[in-house]
Each structure stands twice: as structure tokens, then as C-alpha cells.
Length: 143
Image (tube, rainbow, N blue to C red; front, side):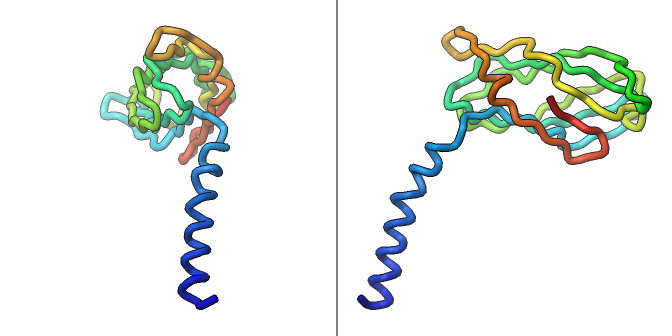
């Protein structure tokens, strides 16, 4: 077998395996607390990156979150609405928390799903069971 034939065979094998690996990935909905910034009004602007990899179009997604202060005390329960996301869609959403600077927030935790419906109106637990969270800054974010 020539080197060129070996490369062709290897490339073909990779192309046949790649779709199977992608299909085996577990469905997920990811929320990344991407950035935080203090606003001119003294609040904190949270920028989330949401990605729908559930395999289904989502009509409405929102989560109730608990906001903890620097001492670890819950100061608020809020609902963050991410709206609709087609399958494979990534969406950037900003929320302004008035009356507190970002340094006054130590952690944000997803408390529960406030709304999770498919494009056809049905609901399910996939918005929590497939939820993946991450934070890229000083404020912790998770389940």
C-alpha cells in the first residue's frame, strides 16, 4: 500500500466514525456565565451564552436562580428568561441586576426550571437533566 492510499483509507475511516461519535453525545443545554460587569447605575450586568444541543427546538426556556452575596447569604431569587432556541443555536443574553455591584455577588445557583417547552408546546425535564453550567469569571455559577 502506498503512502497516498494509506492516507486516503485513514481519512475515509475518520469520516465514517466522526458522525457516529457526534450522535453518541448526550443531549444538553449549556449555560455559560461568560462575563460580568458593573453598570453605571451601580448594578451588575451578567452576560450568559446559552447553547441548545438537546436535539429539539425549544420554544421557551427560563431558570429560577438564587443569588448569593459575598458572605454566602441568598439575597434574591430571580427568573432568567432565555427565550426560544432552535436546535444547535447559541444565543447571548444579558441581565442587569440593579442595586448591587458584581463584587457583592459570590455565587449564582440554578434553583429550578421556571419554563421549558418544546416548539410543539410539550414540556419535559430535559432543561434540567441535560443542563451544563460554567463560569468564566469570579462569580461561581452552577446547579
